[in-house]
Length: 79
Image 1 (cartoon, rainbow, N blue to C red):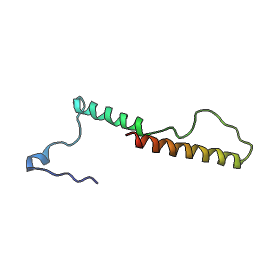
Image 2 (cartoon, helix red, strand yellow; image 1 turned 45 degrees about the vertical axis):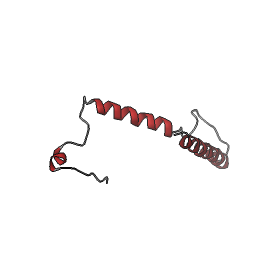
Image 3 (cartoon, one colour; image 1 turned 60 degrees about the vertical axis):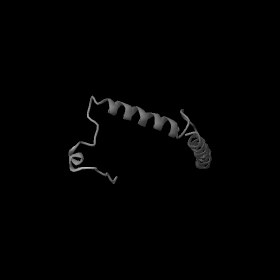
Image 4 (cartoon, rainbow, N blue to C red; image 1 turned 120 degrees about the vertical axis):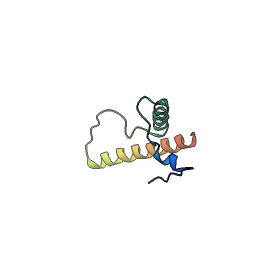
């Protein structure tokens, strides 16, 4: 739960959520989406993959997990 500090009692009564139509709402959404695009990566490549065994599936998932981890680290360094 976030902690909010107030300078006066009047500040407590103001809404802390953005109202529809508020220009700050759209800027906040744009910043949130931008952050999501920079920090989020696809969890797996698109498409349908056939496997002959469970071991083959596990190996492919491990490769994807490593690729996602490296992409996350690279994206974090570029933020």
